[in-house]
Image (tube, rainbow, N blue to C red):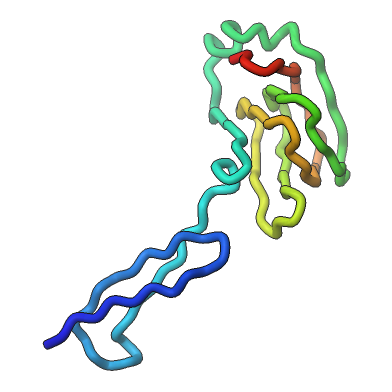
Length: 137
């Protein structure tokens, strides 16, 4: 019996193929698409459920506070920004994308310089933030 393997490229995604020995065209190929995470594509770094020790190391309690309610906000970052979400959640839709990144209370997010995105807030939201110069960790 012959083994066949086929991969179909999808724009903006990786393709994983599963090999089968069944020659029936209906069952010969099983292809699953795995999309690259947006955080990886746009170089957005996220730490989930950050410990109090980590927050103290960064001095988050001294950062500026920003809050909002339900809204959509177009935004572009002129410098790297480090954000700790204290309350709520945000959905970040990069310009030109139909997919979104979702960040929740307890997440520490580093947005890179030059990122352009729409931010969607569905409820009260509060964050602490600081801007980072090139080379700052």
